[in-house]
Image (cartoon, rainbow, N blue to C red; front, side, top):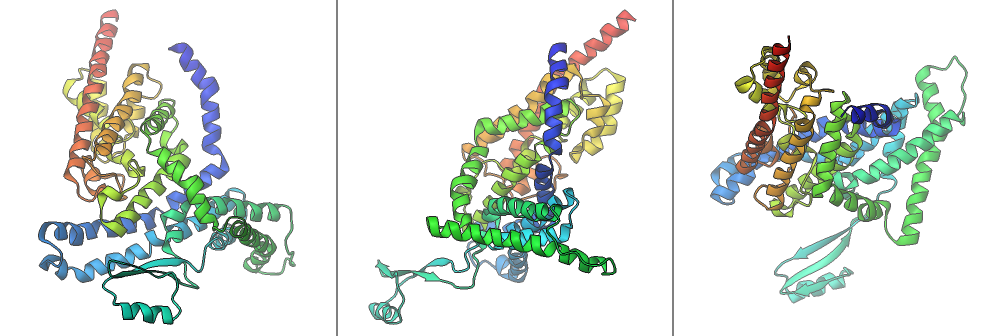
Length: 468
């Protein structure tokens, strides 16, 4: 054990710290964190409509009196959704450019604007929409053809057509589906902007010019070059492949990564690594934030978009999302230490441990566990090494099993991370009671795994007392 600890401290942790401090990865993490107010507002709007519209329609049928009475509230929530989740990629593009430029000590506001414009330059402004018109007469079909509408097909009395909408952007490009495009082009074009400024390819004005004006002129040439680079890359993609960058990125990068992220062993590996970092005193979820935020957050938002479009839980594409960690494996905080607190309060004979558990319990209910991580301590404590690594992995496997079996739906609504055990899973799955019960089951499992080591700590204390 001592050899392993020495190897981890001297070889593994320096690499982990470098990764955690890498500027591009930190900018991605901070970009996702910055748009949390937007994602939270959209998630709350969806959650409210679950209770105002979706569940009542399921229980009492469409057009019931309760839903009708809540029509205006439902419409307010729809407006909020349109102003948040539908434009997440645009919000993230600005936030990413802002934080990346800030990391390089370059004007962050201009950098955010350049990143946003560069991402919009990749988008198709004349998308095609498929329309279906039921019960259309043959005369109406002839009238449409005479009007020059092309791409018509008739089947079972319904007419399908493909309509081009010029000067419009599909919300598919500006919502969660466009996040990876925003990430890639935001990074590339922001770095072009940053490097040109660092190379002094800027317009220099006299010192007497106000700072705000000077900053705008400094950003002018680098910003123009960065945005034109995005537009040129987009046109090359269109000419070479017939598809816009968002389509190519979604097909060849985003979908494979998101699909891989929900893989059983991938989730368990992420849990294991987060706990391993924490054991050495490094915030595991922060180190892995480029993965948990950059991959699992888009998965959650994509699930949310699919739910809003279909209202069918069986259509949600990703089994494990960012909120799944909080719902099923982090009750009380990383390591599911709420189970440890309960085990100590009922079975520990050590006064020091019971005192710490009593102090940590109120905060543990709301998923704040630094007092117990550093107070017990768990960090660098070989006694708790095994359960610390084991509990999140086992509970993640349980939650994944229930999700893959279709017993509980995937998490698709973002909920404040301080939500107590059971309530988080209930709200994050749109009011699913089974999800709340699975979260409580995982709390029980964590208690069972932590308990033998609490009893072992009692025996260690007894041995120390006898030796004294």
